[in-house]
Image (cartoon, rainbow, N blue to C red; front, side, top):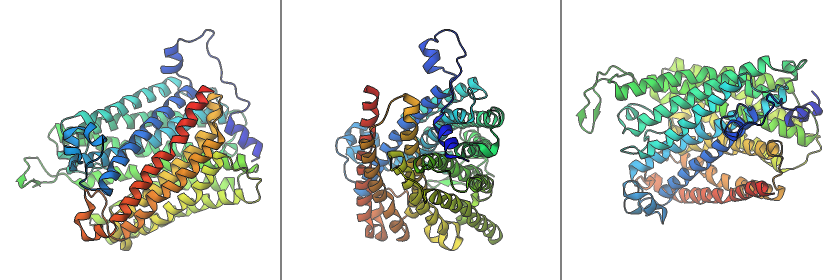
Length: 533
């Protein structure tokens, strides 16, 4: 495959969007309830960026409590009210809400809609020479199902007892007996999952049926292959979680006991429930989605990195077919590794051996993809533009995330590391300097195509270097905390002796997080300056 094909397809050259009407559409039809894939892609992208910044702000509140437990939060503590911050000090219940909502918002309202709804909608039809998505109205509906789900998720903060407090994994029985904000969380998730299912069907049909004449599967840009595999993952993995979410709603409001075991005792009193349910059932259904979800977060980013590298090295991707086979293999294997999240649930040795083996196997295609990207750099006439900086930084950051995941895939080491800060560091290296750096590369790369405006390269590079330094200060120390045995989700780590031993690292991480927030200012300034230009 030639460089010209990659770069032309990547930037949509030679494609003029079909004009289906003979008169100017009203504003609300053109920019709000639009069926244009480019407008819908921008709607997804802007919405996702707003929620990414909101979810990031929740994390900064969390980091205050972890760095300075029991100390009043200046200014903001008073603004959040006495229920959440009595005397300016974070309440334990509010801390749990922040943890649950940070994870939910960043994954389901931020990264996935930006990677798939934003970049997928805008770029895929342009790269395959299609006039639009296969089902334009369904595309519009998917966004307008997604947005109410996002708003409903935020409204859970306003419920009596606050938002969901059971973590982004929503484990029962805690989630089944939590305050009413958990019910709102479930309802919002049903809408968000439905939106993803509608979008995945649209992507699959579009790529299979609407390719330009002569554009075979082996001539598609790698980005399109990544989006196609991602769409299949969404289509096959999300329905079990949607069913489980509806079952959890029924447990909460209709008296069923899908996930509530018999004889459950809370605060010294036995609950009057039907019983007979299994919390492990939820874990199986959740992780059957959530591990493919990891690849939903990362595969579109890999596609973006491939486009940026091919363009900025001015040479074809090395091992194009190998890359395509690798993402297909990842998609298949992602459905047979979910239970490595559940080694500590009393799993038998036969089953744990199977999932340890599949976990090691699925790491191989990721190594192949990184190797192909590195070989694509070799011998190229590299231009270190802003998107290229983010794309090249993706490679070592994702490698760190992948390598640190290997001990978690083995029961012998997972016994010690499970549910510690080590897990947080591993996961975030995959999705923060991994996925998000790739998405920033895509924003800087395709922003001129989407808006007709140019972002400042100087501000872009400042954004990159500040983010690169700060993000490693945030997540690298977590590995040392985890190896010291510090459990995650602790409201006050200093109540444990081993927690006090690594408390200084919590301060370092928190200052790194606030530095990472400051590092986003050049991006925000750059964005608004470009709109005024």
